[in-house]
Length: 68
Image (cartoon, rainbow, N blue to C red):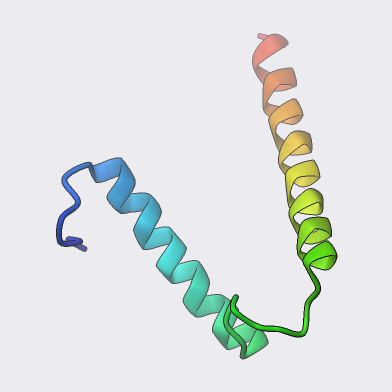
């Protein structure tokens, strides 16, 4: 997929993945991220939970790489 105005293939790959994830979210939840039924604090908690998951994934990879 070629995205107009984007010359960096890494940025283009991220943008493509974001678009795909958005489409999947719409299929799953049926509402866009602009939804108004979630409070700001709830959005922050969702983000915090995602960040904690990321920390676990990163720790796992670090552990794997450190044991070699």
